[in-house]
Amino acid sequence: MTYTSPLLQRAGAVAATGPDEGVAWHYGDPVAEQRALERGGGVVDQSHLGVVRVAGPDRHGWLHSITSQDLEHLRPRESTELFVLSPQGHVEHAAGVVDDGEATWLITERASAPDLAAWLERMKFMMRVEIEDLTGRYVAIGEAVAAEGAEDEPVTWHDTWPHVVGGGTRYGPPEDRHPGADRQWRLVLIPAASLADEVAAREAAGWRLAGTWATEALRIAAWRPRLGREVDERTIPHELDWLRTAVHLSKGCYRGQETIARVHNLGRPPRRLAFLHLDGSGHVIPEPGAEVRLRPEGENAPGKVVGRLTSVARHHELGPVGLAVLKRGAPADAELLVTSEAGESSVEVAAAQEVVVPGEGVSADRPEARGQLTPGLRGGDGLL
Image (cartoon, rainbow, N blue to C red; front, top):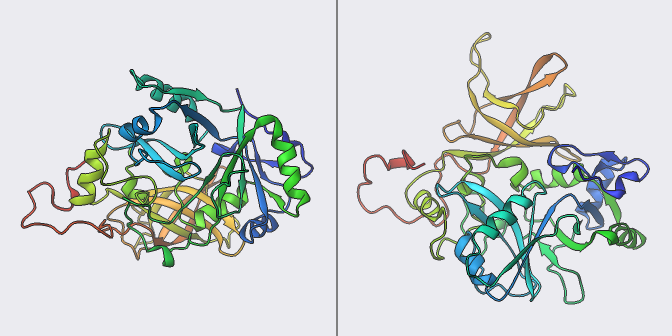
């Protein structure tokens, strides 16, 4: 059943599409909404997200053993992230994680929640855990706040991006030079019936209601990957610099762990995330999924396809921006063209790239190579 937030009835509300369908894209002034979030005075309807609750005395050790994150000693009101990976190390699910002392809450894309809950149920075996998909009964509101939830607050997940958590590593710049360092974001879980009242209370305190145009523009500018956008069936976390927050490299075995360790130690990610500055002079912005090509040398020569656009938004200061997943070998200094469909024809939109994950694919703490690498493993060839 398609979800529709009651806040879409607000005057001026324009509905979002894609993975944000069901909530507002904006409420009439997306520039002001972005600015409100940047200064810490914005609230966002995120009631379209999925919510899964895991209770029971075995929940920490059990989740620790089957996911990418160290959750064995997760403390109440401590936020982190996890992946459920395929046996080949591809991302199947990603979720924000926070515990309230009685249960562990997982926040993910709405479309992913039923499959995540079903997979957890299949993996339960004799463990003392109880899994509930509470999507629709509990909803999230987003706040431009850089803090964990307090004891007197509802269950709250704080996004620690781009901080490198214990056991994680980075491919991109250190936190103090990362464009996402100043982004403030957390999700507060509330009963669905309380959504309008909770938003109204924040508005009464002077906060502005913002839509997903604002959140996506700020997320993209922070180089923050998202399950519903940057991830496809081939994605491994290294490609998106997502080992910062969602992977513990020193924990015990879990499904997909071999690929995580092998690519980190020996190989290079097959693809790499890039941030794109899009040419907005033609007033045409490509859609997510558009092909990304190298600018051809000859006038009639077709440009080589090197990836796809995964996210796009118009930022209030940077203009049109996007994230793209490119082939590892795509030159970091290459001029790019992104295909945009305009009516019955297509238009090539020029794009300049900033490297998020370098093509050499070496993390900040990759172990030193010991002698000659085994043929077939040099540079990550044949790893996946």
